[in-house]
Length: 497
Image (cartoon, rainbow, N blue to C red; front, side, top):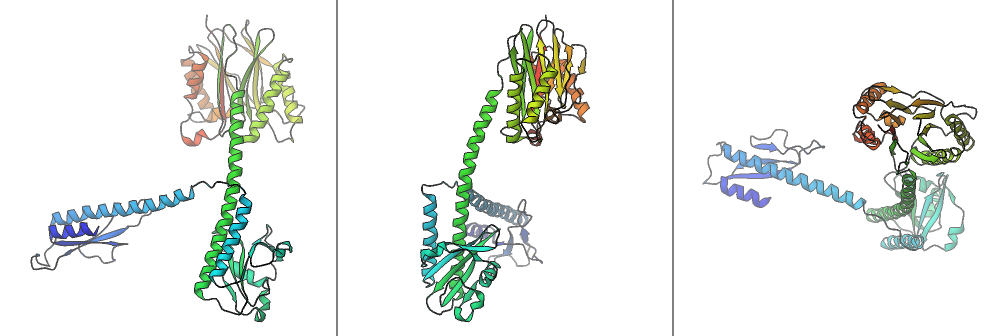
């Protein structure tokens, strides 16, 4: 930067100096401010253009030529961009430092004890003390327990916690003030934890949490100057960092283990979904589901039954995440079990409802659309619990076959009724969950479903899997809607002749 300003002076006869910070309240004629820092709104500095005082220079009263001013402005912008880049790099490096993974090493607990003792020893020796002790608050913040020490008998660890009430030195320290007792015999009201002639107490805290206090003890009466007090506070900060690191290590290990379990649960839930449609002459079946999180409560299913029929279902458990996934897995298992001997869709739902209700504390519920396909006749017998949505698409019209019914798991006495619809060649039954309906583009819910039905009717000649893709194309694409709710759609189509 200095070389650039010298070169500018040699070429133009005018001196260019860049000053960090805002420009003066009353700037001279040739002072500018660099562009504002985006997101901050402050200028990193300003440039000042002055006439060089030399015999070869033009008159001092002469204004800088336009070309000189333009060149100075361009250089100033470059300097401003350079400073902003340096500042951004400084911030990013700090963020990257915080993102360095903390690895749990072998025998980590013993290493922590050794590190704390080493820090205490180094701090005590640095200020000429013979002992040091770290006391941390309990969860109720009513007592202080010795957690690490140097220069004290190990029997101290077996002693009970010190009550915080009455520990005036500790209380004063936790308010943010270092407490120095030059002669503890004269200051017994401060209630020091050990009997030493002199002692000092500083707080141990993170930026958001007070952890406890740090004591240093000396075998002779003495004072602690400002330099020594600052060293004690630095040692307290180091201890707080060690404790935070230990918490981070434990939480990181626990979080990594939980993530592995969650990945396994996601894989199992995904693999439980059927991927190959049943081979039924004249029928085509396809579906798609997406969870708001790694696992969720939406699912689809189909399975073959005796007498050349097929059962299918779309489930939507209330809630999201792991809890909903557990209920969805239980509901899917109940449907497959009871579906083998229940030929009535209403009776199947009633039995599944009883299974969910008896296996919960009353806080689990689900919406479900289940049905049976009679391959030869084209009749689809179905029953509905909750508010799943369903429409029948025909070449010349469409109709809604959904409605509002009691959700599963609300009452053991709920009775569900079976109804049916007839699918002719080329007709399709579209079943989708409430989350899928909420994610559709359009206005209110009825309007969105009407737009979906009309769009699918215009492409009703497509196969079932292509109709599923077309329905997915009607979903919102913004990032917020991607995590709004679990979404599922199923298409059952009777092939044309």
